[in-house]
Image 1 (cartoon, rainbow, N blue to C red):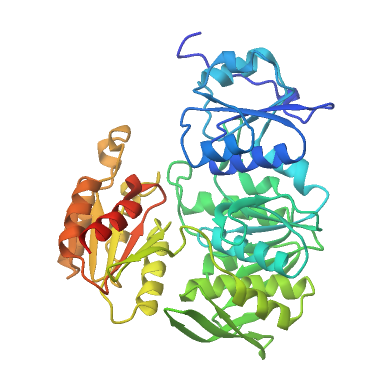
Image 2 (image 1 turned 180 degrees about the vertical axis):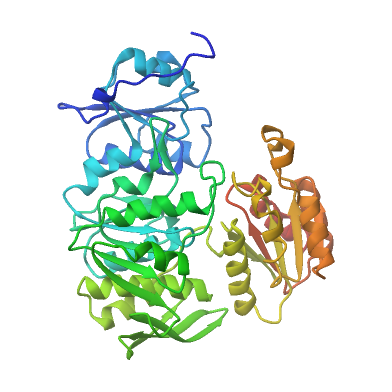
Length: 485
């Protein structure tokens, strides 16, 4: 086998065969793939997997569920000939295990295909799509349905606090799916959400993102047009019509469109918004009349809009306003979404997934309103395939204004990108400083921790923004604060 060999999979084997008992997942340690492995195990399948990055917490989760994981990708991993192989979207055509899969002629599916076949085809699929807010909105929808007694299944990209995990099979009529627009697999470059058979779909926003697979905003819009086109005539799109791109995309929908937002021409209107450190409160107007007052532990305008979208879905499904009010107030949030990791020595350390410029702006704005009067420090790690590219270089300079200080880390793995495509943390800090924002650049996480250890004072709030582990900076900072207090 040579490095130039590429997998040429037989399309006729892209199916769920009869008599499946043994299923192997390639790329099993991804958040969604590990969750799928747990769901398959709960349904009685014999599950195994392989990955090049086997480490906690996913390795512990898989071990606790009795799912063996092979370190690295190799043709030998398929010598036991599973009945079905699930190919994660981290797998390339040149992956040696993918090449072996083609040679073994074993039936295969992508993760979205399997989810659709096993868990969506017999239930009503509720899909949450959009550039921002998917994880929070889908978590909110699933948790509120569960609290109302509907026993939904769900598959979500973040850990839902109420369940301590990101998946649940459930036995009810509904299955909530976070509808990712990222590509499906190397043999299917279409977005994942096209496999999810939506009965009701929420579209929160549409902006340019995923610069590694989308050329521009028009390419992103094309994917969302496809999603809209597969909606059933008796389905419903709940769309944030304040967003002009969303409004345009859903204008040709074959089903009902229910608009939500702050504009008075929406079916559902957010009104009377108030935010503080205890959360948010607002009034929902439906058809121009007062539908009810709501409260949530989640601060920020964007979180209230996400809540309004869920309220619109639940009302359409027949839930009464009192139940919706109760369940929204009970919702405890999602890990890594404005999650308070700890308060030590009067310093609050917050973990958030924000990385797109819009997400950064909305998150910091929400935290500013929640912690009014306290010094807010934003620590930003450009880590995604988009944020490590210069596509948002100028945009980032305009979204940190709510912070009193901004600390930016040097991105990792820039050598994999052409020099003229690379994001510059130094330039961002220079641009922020030129606009009057107190900004600092550091090449390494250790440098950031040393600096924070010198300057932090009681009452400070540190918002750590990254879609990755950020060298465990959250726990290390809390330990540093504890040692010095």
